[in-house]
Length: 290
Image 1 (cartoon, helix red, strand yellow):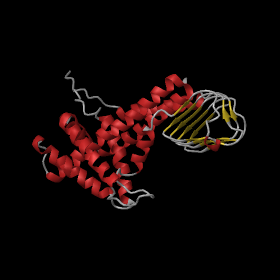
Image 2 (tube, rainbow, N blue to C red):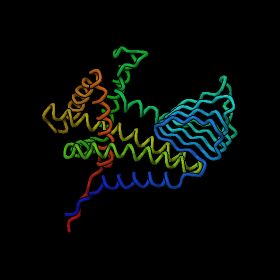
Image 3 (spheres, rainbow, N blue to C red):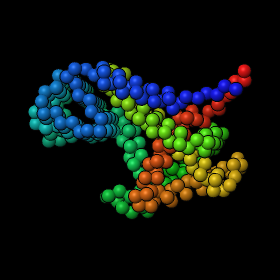
Image 4 (cartoon, rainbow, N blue to C red):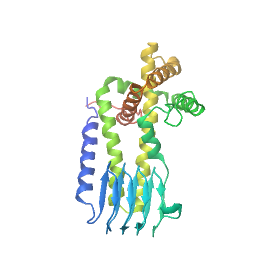
């Protein structure tokens, strides 16, 4: 028998290749930052790319300014000679007017912002402004999660079941694959934004963000099903809706516990991405007899 293996080494190789290319091919006079805020206080002849960072422009940037998962603010004297692209963040010009940008100003969607928020907390968890867990918006989010999971189960029962079995057989590998998968998608988007023209980099970044969101949604539904099947002690197709609901209630209940709940949901989100990627969204794995 020949089995398809090597998913984790492939993800790791892609991760290292992207990191190497990003550091080796960065344009002279440009700035690339990951998780470190950038303050442009002197003229920059190239472009500025920031991932999960805020950028403050207080001088002239001759090239593009691309921010992935952060905000851009302008100070007097700050300007951009190229395009300003902000994914999942806000643009704060001086005095609330038009940003001093010679090229295009684009904020193509907020998929990354939504995904990062979901990675940090459960969708019904209270915020600083609205601490009540029982608020209407939180209940709507809770109902939406359950509805989406049930819809996936209705249309993709077999793929969800295969994905759940895959996660159960190798939970540690699934967690590692999820962490590497998230890093790979973010680095792929960051490398594209750093090295490619905007007309090519924007679609790649949007596809990476969309893939991360879809992987989490599918993987979470598979985790709900896996946990529920253990609770109801049945893997019968007829019991799958009840099992998924039971798993959802159990994981949702744990996520409401202060501090511990947010950590559990974050780990579950990473595992969910690994479930989707390793199982290829639940597609069958064929074996070839030799």
